[in-house]
Amino acid sequence: MSDHSLDVGLSPDQVTGIVLAGGASRRMGRNKALLPMEGMSLIERTVQVLDKVSGRVILSTNVPAAYQFLELECIPDLYVGQGPMAGLHAALKSSQSTWNMVAACDMPYIHERFLRGLLDLANKQYAADAVIPVVEGRMHPLLAAYRKETVEGLEHRLIKGQLRMVEWVQELNAVFVHEEQLEAMTGLDPRRILFNMNTPGEYEAAGGLMNSDLSEDG
Image (tube, rainbow, N blue to C red; front, side, top):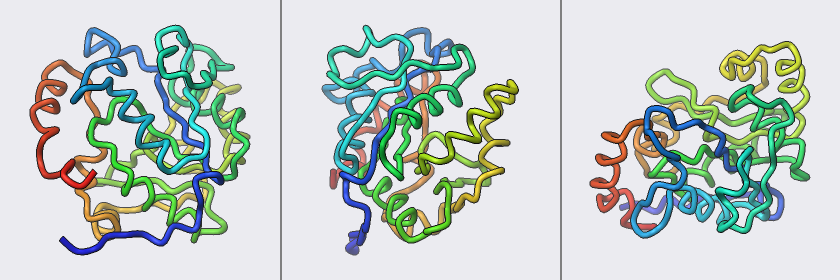
């Protein structure tokens, strides 16, 4: 395999990692974040990877008691009941970093090298508000890098009750990174990295795939 090392200009102390753990997990039937995956909970995997690229990791949640074992700062929504946009808003308000690496807690294949690729692009795009993956024509705003300043537009939309994240993202000066570029940069399959689990069947399938080639190099 070729060397996919990345020259990342952003050091971890310039980045805050944000874990979004506000989903209701209705289709899964239990809290997705706490599902075990290869010896640790899914949210622990997410925190572990974010910790490698961030100087500070915070948790966006309205149920901090469920995550006390992580010993992380928990940030509750300021606009309760308004979905993932509210969680991202509260976390960005709490951040003291220019760039913030955001990850939902239900992606079992999240990988340090993928996050470094997004942050490398963020560092090079001086005028960008965000760096967002696009796979098979679909934006993935819940595994993306955002400038802290984007919180202002988020707040305006939350006040107005405009809760479609895709519409907010389209207002940003965002860099949209397609799967071909992501794969060339990182050597990883973006479709797998961005896979998120919503049902017991998807969890079972993911558990059976964790020993495949994606995890062979950390």
